[in-house]
Length: 272
Image 1 (spheres, one colour):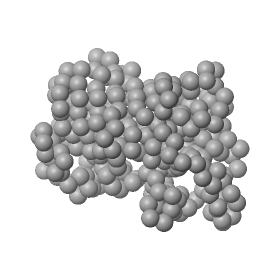
Image 2 (tube, one colour):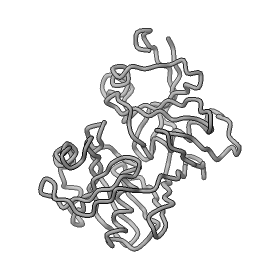
Image 3 (cartoon, one colour):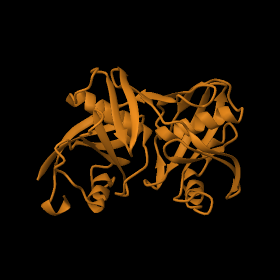
Image 4 (tube, one colour):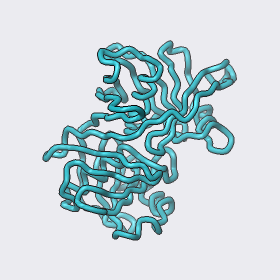
């Protein structure tokens, strides 16, 4: 069975994206894991299916690299929109899309070539100070759960993100279901650098959209930055822009979404 796919990068987060509006494709967790494997598969942080929606332009089904359904992925959402735009998924405005993910509505627009602005859910479940694995840790849910840990300026590059992040990620006594873990340094009143250990990928990724949002809003909430438009430099070297209002609502995430290549999967019938 042959299936066309496009691989996209959202500021370094990479995804296999497939048009499944026919609803003919069902992938097992084992097959998704094999497709996302870096050395033996296509390689990706996750897999996205674009499906029909009864209410909106499309439905985004997101799976982590471990093959399991994931919570909201901000960069994945932006890549899903750019994918829909590139293949001509109908919408009321060719550059504006309304889609659903995990039962929630999201609005997004293609603002320029390979740039997408995504309106996020309001952050919630703020916890301003937690002692975890020797860190003063902060927590917020931005559609996905995120721990936020501040690093002194100049030390972020030397940090063992995989080792430290894995320890915090698995503290299910503090974070039921586990958490993503963001380490960040404040560069200026309107800019931060972020490195993220992602749950479901179980490794450091080159970017994390919901993590960028979590880091930006928590930095503002705690008075570490003063701007409500924040430049977030991620591990890939790309910059995401997070904006929000005084109440930490009306959050948007803007950044690059690029098509890396197009290909065809040869799937065994047993894998669908």
